[in-house]
Image 1 (spheres, one colour):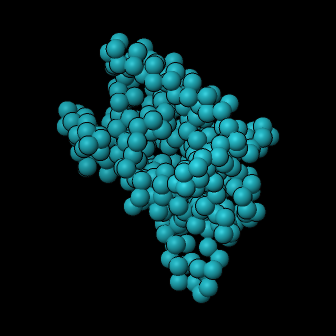
Image 2 (tube, rainbow, N blue to C red):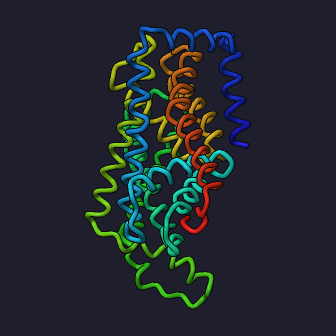
Image 3 (cartoon, rainbow, N blue to C red):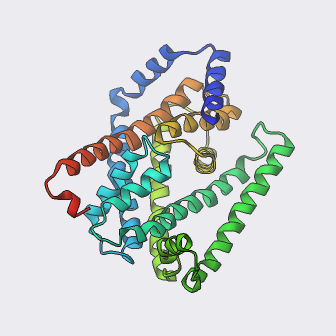
Length: 312
């Protein structure tokens, strides 16, 4: 239902502006011109940096269950991204990470995957709140809608603080129910992390967010948008916030959600919708589709590799 509404909004925006696929194709051709080659190269170079940082974060958290090499961590991240094409994104991400762990106890790392995703979630929320505060009054939302967003963001932050300070209770929780015992085994790792573990992993997460932000700004710099750096950064942070809070069915659905949010956020500046779509689409192509193809190759490779089942 959310996907249908998103696509309807995108169609309505282009219809009202009398724009179509031809306009997008023209803008893409201009964006890929030689003058933008340094920008495109910079965006592409940041792709492995982005996923390397996520791999380091995952390696840092998963080591409480099983020693993990950077190579296997990187493979798990890309495999999870590829599985997310068919499965709900977070589920596919978790499956990919867990599948490559070379240990009979790998299911106990489910909690580590939740912590890793949760960290990136809250980093995006905190940065998004800053963007929301800057752009709040300019957005075409009713006062009631803005109030609801304020409440939602406050509740999200409060929930994170509560979870942070109550996670240790998982270590002293010993349910009698067999099903709950399994859940406890999978999640107990959440209570094991100390401040240093979480600080290091969070540092990787913050750096990864900055890479995302830089790539988006670079993509938008290919167009002559009349925005200050503060306005651009705030709007991009708000786009990431919406993408974080609004559930996407999978990484394909994430594509439409990104475009929808960008069109809505930048509407206040009367920017050409075809250029906004192109900027966000290029981010998805470079930063998501490319790694997905690599992840699909890794799934194929390790599926047919002899004896791989005994290792993964």
